[in-house]
Structure formats: C-alpha cells, structure tokens
Amino acid sequence: MPHFLPVLIIAVICFVGLLLVFGGGFVSTQPEKPSHYLPSDRTIEFSNFEVYYTSSEEKAGYVGGQISNGVFAVERKRIGFQVTIPEEVSEAFIDLKVWNSNYYGKMVIWVNGKDVYVDYPPVGEKLIGFDKSVLEKDNILEIEAESSGWRIWAPTVYNFDSDVLINYLGKKTKSFTFELSDLEAQNINKARVTVFGDREGTGNLDILINGVKVYSGITTAYKDFSASVLRAGNNTIDFSTEPYTKYDISSAQVILIFG
Image (cartoon, rainbow, N blue to C red; front, side, top):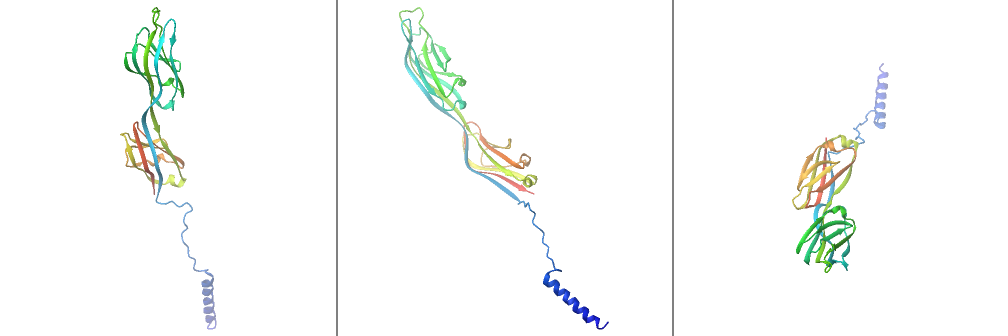
C-alpha cells in the first residue's frame, strides 16, 4: 500500500494535466442567440410626398357671333373642345352673354348631340349648367336658333358670346406597402402612426392601414392604433384628404413596439 499511493498521486496529476490540455473537464457553455432575433421596436418611414383634394376651373372652349334661322337662310355655330380628365369633372357650364335678339325663336345649345338648353335667354349674362356625364375627351358644342316660323320677312337672330367652363375636383392619394415577418406580427405590443407636414385648407388627413382608418385629423399627428389591423406579410398604408385641402408631408412613420 505505501508503494501504491505515490503511483496514484502521479496518475491523478497526469489526468488533471490532460484535462487542462485538451479541455475535457472545463467546457464553457454560453446561451445561443435565437435564430430569429426580434428588436425592441421598429420604425417604418415614408417621406416627402403630398396628397390633395382641390378644385380648379378650366375654360375649355369659346364660340360667339351671330346665329339666325329664317325661310331663306340658316346660320349656326359649331366648335370642338377638349376636356382634360372627364372623370374628374365636378360641374360643367355654358357662360352665355347675349347682346341682342329679336326673340322670334328660342336659342338651342347642343353638347355632343344632346340639347342642354332650349329657351329665350335674356339680354345679358346667363350661366347654364348641364349634365357632366355627356362630356368626353373630345366634344362638340353647337348653338343655333329656332325658325322664325310664319315671320317670313325676318329670321330669328341672336348676337352672343359663350364660353364652356369645366370645374374639376381633383383627388390625389398616396399609398405605400411594407412587410412584417411572422415573428413581428405575433409580438406587436403597441402600434403608432406619426405624421409631420404642412396643410393648406381646412380638411382632415385620413390614414388607412389595410383598409381600416387609423387616423383622421390634422398634422402634426401622433396616434396609437390597434395592432390587430396589421398582419404578417404585405401591408398597405393609404394617405388621403378631404375636399379643398392639400397636405405636404415631410415625414410619416409607423412605429411598432414588440414585447
């Protein structure tokens, strides 16, 4: 036994030395970072765009002079005119100015073959509205007088000027898309929208996410909204405004807090 103890001590020392050399006994274990790491928050930025809903007027055409209709002669006026964006027309008018007439017959005004006015217009100015649905991009305006009938000695006569006036109510919206991962969509704790920009007019700025209105008001905006409107994959955010208003947006953000 006395001879065995030194051998045992030497064996233990050798074994410890081998562990130190090859690391067999001292393994350092550190937690692995998850393969899908999620930060505490995410800011999605949209910048430098405008939305508006404004009104404008266009003088699309003019015709004037004299029209007449009698037994021996007929004189009418006919012009073509264009409408830039027919689907955005809000109102259409004939601005008629009659200088003189014998009123033996009525004045008849046609737009694209549809009579929009048949009457005795008074001397002076008269604004005649007509159905905007008759308008196309290329249009024909015709103005004529009814016959003087049994008054064979004189035709119906009108001296006049007329303008075609087109009012537009134009709307410009702005849409963006952004992506959310499955992990992000499942762990949203709070969602917020912020908007910074300038306003012209009195209308509100409307913001829809995936078709759901999350904000309606003026800038500067700072509004929390329900995270339930967001989804994994593709999301859409739409900006628009009310009539007679324009927003020049310098920065808009969707801020997501995870937890």
